[in-house]
Image 1: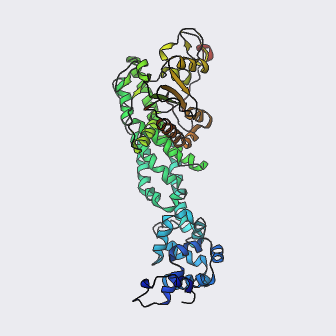
Image 2 (image 1 turned 90 degrees about the vertical axis):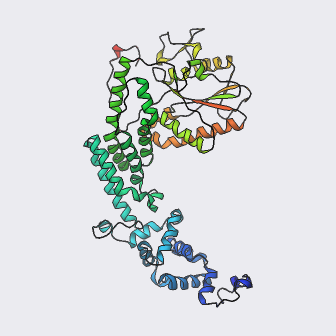
Image 3 (image 1 turned 180 degrees about the vertical axis):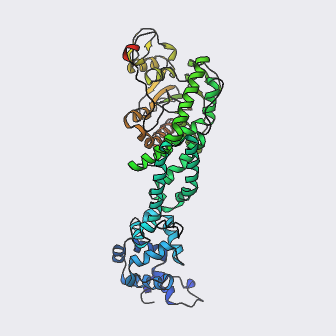
Length: 468
């Protein structure tokens, strides 16, 4: 009572009346949350002890002896970590508190590693892996890494079956604290590899290019999305190699089959040009903006990333209408960006320009950035720079996104940037709508393929082409 006298003096009399007060009641006044205090002390014994006065420390020791059969002063933190990892008795509640916010206790993993079974015995056949021991998670991560690396020479069907089997073994680890702490990247990537395996079980098909495109927009794009998601989970070189080995086993054959099928169809059925699906429209109609509408051009906003953007906007309660069309050929920004602009009908392809750039029909001059902006202004469009919102009573054109740039410069690491680009796009849309624009139309120029380790490539002799 003397130790807790200060806290006791602040208690309401009514909270104490009619009760028999024992030593534990006064200790609780000093340590109202013993599980949290115990975790804080295990995480940083010296620092925590220094912050507590003698009364609080004595009360904490009493509670530990009574509730956890453990004396912090006499036994030390290493002895306390053993029942914590074993989740024995009252320690189960302490571990659950740790699992709720593991980032608060950054030193605990090393303490548990020292207190628990040796790594060599972590996955012995005599016991089930324990979610509380970091060495168990590490051993399973290594096992998964070796399994994924072995995919290198597997056939697609066998690889897909093996991925499913690995998910049954490792999927649960995504609920462990080690996944939340970023120490189970392969287990996290595995769920996306499962989606990839499922999406690539069926080859993209169809009797016409349009039918094949519908098959892609109705579900085939999930394969591309799964590749980016799985790559975004890993950073260490060995983990990337493991994910890529499994990915290439199922994704590359699917890509090659789709490409060959599409080429064969185009030989029989030429592409339909500027048709927009599901509502058909001419080129000028699909890019026309009315008063109160601004067009946001997002470079390289591939279909699956567009779906991620759409899902983000729908989650905010926004109304989102979606359409798709064939990319202009050749599918590079210099050609395809002007083709989705409101001034597409003012441009011509009947020139011999480098880098596949178009020309202004009226002057015959090559389309440059400055001439493109001038054309937009002449047709009543405000060209809005980054951060500008313009006059929402008119029509506008603005640009955003560096997916194409990131892809060329960073390769597969582009996967780390996708969420960042989507957030940037959402922020820009928000700013435009809050400024008073009634509608924002997001358009893009082209998609892209990404396969770590490289795609099949055939060198084209320079004498066979006017430009490469």
